[in-house]
Each structure stands twice: as C-alpha cells, then as structure tokens.
Amino acid sequence: MSGQPAIVATDLSFSYGDHRAVDGVTFAVAPGEILGFLGPNGAGKSTTIKMLTGQLAPGGGTVEVLGLPMPARRTEIQSRIGVCFEEKNLYPAMSAAENLRFFARLFGIRGFDPAPLLERVGLAERAKDRVSDFSKGMRQRLMMARALVNTPDVLFLDEPTDGLDPVSARTIRALVVEETRRGAAVLLTTHDMVEADELSDRVAFINAGRVLVLDTPERLKLAHGERSVRVRSLGSDGAVAEHLVLLDAADTAERIGAAVRAGEVLTVHTEEATLEDIFVLYAGRGLAS
Ligand SMILES: Nc1ncnc2c1ncn2[C@@H]1O[C@H](COP(=O)(O)OP(=O)(O)OP(=O)(O)O)[C@@H](O)[C@H]1O
Image (cartoon, rainbow, N blue to C red; front, side):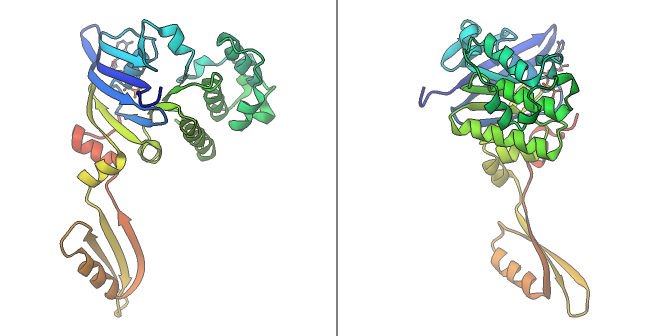
C-alpha cells in the first residue's frame, strides 16, 4: 500500500436530473493524510463522498479506494473504511456499547471489546446508557467511535464537529489526528475554516461541483494572502497609535523598527489571510450558504 494513494477520484461527475451536482472532480488522498474538502452548502461535497463510499454510482469518472475500484469492489472496500455522517447510523434504543458491538458484528469482527474505543471518545462511563438519552455531542463522539470499529484505512468524515461544544470538538479532532498517525487517510468536510486549517495537510475548495484549487493551507495563504504585523504603541503624548506593516515589502524591517520605536509597545500581532479569505478570492463568494 505504501506510496499508493488511499483515495483516487478521477474526473468524477454526477447529476440529479438536469442538475449537475458534481462536475469533473479529481483528487487523491495519501495514507496518513487529511484532505479538507471545503465549500458552501450545495457545492457537491456530500454527493462526491457518496460516490467515494459506494452509496451512489458515479455518473462519470472513476473512484479507487485502497487500490480497488468503487463500486465494483464495494463490499471489500466498505469493510476497510470508516464513515461518520449522520446520526441516523446509531440505534437509539441500544446502549453505546451495544451500538459498537452491533457494528463490529456487521464487520464480522469476533471478540470485539467496545471499552477501549468508548474510552478514547470519552464515553467509558456511559457505555451502558441508551443512546436516546445522549446529548448531540455524545452521539457525535459515539458516531466517531463507530467509524473506528473496524480500524479503517480510510476515514470519511462529514462535519464531524458540527454543533459540538469546544471540549467535544477537541476530542474528535484529536482522534482524527491519532488515526492519521497510524496511517489512515482522511477526507474531512467542515464549514469551520479554523478547524480545516488546523487539521488539513491539504485543502480542496469546491464550488458548484468543481474543485477550484487544491493545495496546502500554508501555500495558499502565502500565495494569496497579505501577511502583516500590527503594532500598537503608546506615544509620549498619551495617544495610542497603530502601525500596520506588510511583511513582503522591501522596507519591512525598517518599518517594523520604526513602529516599535514610535512609543511604548502595547501589542504586536501578526496577521495572515484566512482560508475563508482565500475561498472568497477563488469563488467570488464566502463559504456561508
Ligand atoms: N437527492 C437529491 N436530489 C436532487 N438534488 C440534490 C440531491 N442531493 C443533493 N442535491 C443537489 O445537488 C447539489 C450538491 O449537493 P450536495 O449535498 O452534494 O452539496 P454539499 O456540498 O454536500 O452541501 P452541504 O454543505 O449543504 O452538505 C445541490 O445543488 C443540491 O441541492
């Protein structure tokens, strides 16, 4: 498997009736890599993921997961991937532990012990409680545990931290990173650009069914963002002055020096373009729906 991409989408397309939801999408995700798949509502992310996970047959183009063609080898692929989509994948009348055991049985895993996974998602204490009594954050963490039951080589995560409190969101983000350390490839959709920036090795911006750009967050920000330093200082006259110095100008060093000498320095902040800024540059619109 080494060196070979875990997910390869080539010229994928799909239409609902006359509406072309996915229009020539091409990308690959390597083992251990997180690809952030970012775009506004209706951009075609879910439709693409459905083709990658075998829920929809591609209208055009090809999908390979773990070197196997989808949907031809769907059953084999599905036994080696994990998906975290919607709550409906959980059985509310069962306990957290029973849910995980149930999915382990579907995967044909013998002697499955749900305890370590429940521990990892912070639900060890609630193992025997019915999922119907769980909060949204607890269900979401259980969904994540469910996605990991078969120790997948590829994870498809659709908004895994949507609507979660900061602690639950952090638990999920840490799990995602742990999974990549053991070599799992991750395709992650999120509307949270800070999260995308923090987690993604590369990001793909998708809009109207097309990939607009695919690169590392760092390269996108360097190529398209104006980096700057903002110095606030207190002058001898008691007035607060603010100096904004662009980092890529020829006289940057002198200007920062002058800003710092202008008075008693109160704060110094570096600023760079955000992924949201860059999306607007490419799409001519923001990520909000
Ligand atoms: N079952 C369906 N029938 C008809 N049109 C659909 C269907 N599902 C999605 N679409 C349309 O296809 C386009 C892409 O939708 P998709 O759900 O893939 O977008 P998305 O990027 O996942 O959006 P979101 O961020 O809201 O999940 C949208 O215009 C949507 O209205």
